[in-house]
Amino acid sequence: MREVVVLGAGLHRYGVFPHKSFVELGVTAIRRALDDAGCHWRDIEAVYCGTARLGMAAGHHICRVLGSTGLAMTNVENASASGSSALREAYLAVAAGAHDVVLALGVDKLGARPERVLQEDPEGKAETHRKLPVHAFAALARQYMQACGMTREQLAQVSVKNHYHASLNPYAHFQTAVRLEEVLQARPVVEPFTVLHCCPWDEGAAAVVVAARAVAARFTRQPCPTLVASVLQSIPNAALDPVWSPVHLTAVVARQAYARAGYGPEDLHLIELHDAFSIEEVVYYEALGLVAAGEGPRLIVDGDTTLAGRLPVNSSGGLTAMGHPLGPTGLGQIAEILWQMRRTAGQRQVARQVRVALAHMVGAGGVCAIHVLRL
Image (cartoon, rainbow, N blue to C red; front, side, top):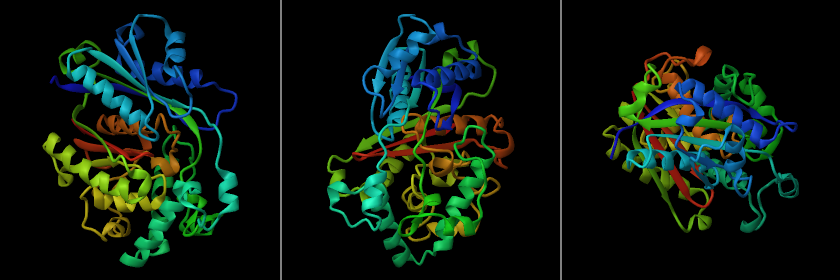
């Protein structure tokens, strides 16, 4: 297997853009990624497009605008992990020698929103088949708080941290910091979550260019981190256990990723992880091996996961505040890691040099993807 590096990345801001088509979002992200990578469109040999909402041939429509070059075009759907899955396919194509330069694209537009179910069932008491993820993760939060003694204030502090990070990110959906009181007093969703504990429904695009290490110097003199691990695994019966499956699966995939990368949790300098709901960040701290079971809140209380902390987590603002447009989300994490490693992240640049970083995404249906990058 060949060594694979990240050449560049580009984003279209996350948010709601009713007057823009998904094609416009995708083309914007691709052009920015090409510019960041020092590539031209004709240099791209294959594209993997991750999307969860757009249906058939979304990537083909986007790439057609940029010009027909005969590249290999593949569309990928894997729920919230669609973008991460597209990156894995791009990585494998280069590592196996099928292509030298490949682009992973994630793009999505808003579709139907589940507000009616929330309005009808604010306490999450509906039958399993009608429940949304927010109901399941709220139940997990209640259980975790009772078992481990985490307070409402500690849980809310996750949102405070991520909204502050997002306030420094020009690509984030939400760009205003919030106070602890604002999180606690915001509109209730499902106990104990207020709306500021939850990721928004939004849209956007992200693109990442990967290449064989041997050809990287043709395009850029910027530091190009190596993808030292790309692991994806699923649990077929995840629908029977929609919460504990991603937590357990994260622990399993993390062990595999650490083994392949040759690094452990103690070696990480930055993490971008799936936090569609604030409790997820806490339980994934533990599943990733950062702390022992029940000790996740300590990282929040001690400030370890802030930009100036020992191990910054979600410097982008995470899903809660940067946004979660599904298709682009996992690739947006890679873009954040790349820019942090290059120290081009502007106001949200983390204090220490980032040499080893991890990106983590889960998806409905029981899938988890973890990528480890090394500079």
